[in-house]
Length: 352
Length: 276
Image (cartoon, rainbow over all chains, first blue to last red; front, side, top):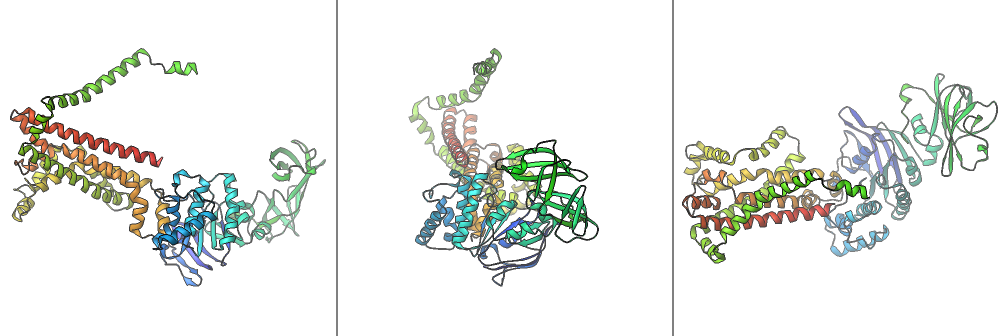
């Protein structure tokens, strides 16, 4: 189903949860609404589901107006963050609920339920109650339940937020395969950029109730439209800088930059993996800490006249030779962008 | 490990405190219970049955049983409805209504009876009009039912409220998203959750109603074969020097009450385990 959202607004008191949002979702695609908590992405999803009403703006499903359609009538599947399974019903009854409500015959329901339990790898658990399942299993039951009435649109609210890291990774890959198999247009909300990029065809970055950027994952990674997007996707360094003739200067650091910016003060944004450093005297920075995370090494250094900078390397990188706390290093930035330093662009760094 | 065991070994004063508690509870509850059972059955079960065969005793017991069970059923229905409204809707006066729900527990039951008698008595406007319309409340079954509803009001409401609060709103939304109407949603999401609490509290209401004396004694008028309930009958038998028949009816009420108590306990325990 093709979804069109036009100038959607929703306020809670004086707080604008959704602020003039417009976008399109192609039929059959898998789209992520990515943003920090409180950005309005869940409210947006709930408006699409009909669980919240918009103050103004319109929603179209396949060019049919859906703005005032009751949640029951939308033909939308919804997967809740904490599963929201019916705890007094078995797995089988949970999955079959949407069908039996619609008066589908017992035989047809049983057949569909069996099919979905196969698809979601839950065969054999038909008679269990939700309390007897693991988090990952519950989430798959929730998905099977949402898919049973064959919705034209599937909405998922932080679908993997409540399961542990390892299961989350498995569920992500599984969701992508499932989507490719079933082909239902899907929109999911997440605050985890890795999840958004790993699973979706398109990512909408949401911030303060607005869409900051709408693009393919690579587009968002390679050319973040705003400073917020640049800071939100991946670990970055930000320096106040002066840009002249396409070169930004922050202390001893001089970097050729992309991006539009006016003549005034700019913010230079450098991703932690878009820079190289190596031991060199006199260099432009002093190493403070070297921390190893599995396959990666994180180096924290102090740039003369600019402040702390963080760089990430593969664990075995030859550049790391001799790099240790206290030594001097030279820095070479491969890619960086500059954004106008307006007051409104001084976002707090997202918690990681 | 040893030091832990040592640390948990009771000291002498703890042992004294423990013995005192055991003796206190035994003397206060178990002993009088035992005394009644022994006295009531001392002439054998045949004599007990004979005492219960008295037409007046039987009519009093029957009146108490049917009014108590009816009140239990009404409490479940009205209590669930009240809890539902109090939990789910914001409306002016909600806090006041919620406070009023607990009041019957604080009011002496005899005073509660007095309140009803004042409102519905023959001298009041309501009472005289109801009497004229042929629907008397005072000295009739409706008065007994009102008095019992009054004293058992909070039980079901206060048992169901926390269960309703605990239900994840997303479960209701999930049912709606899957196409369920309000009634189907209630049956799927809410009813199974609140039913055990409502039923066990309803049973406790019945247990409470069985023994109610204070609220009824003024309202019912205690007319033999018509509005004389079992507790008032027991009191009357004692007053007129018939401890045997009083004990017989008491033993029967005791048996029913204990049966209800253990039934309610079983429901609570069983559902507590399932939610864990």
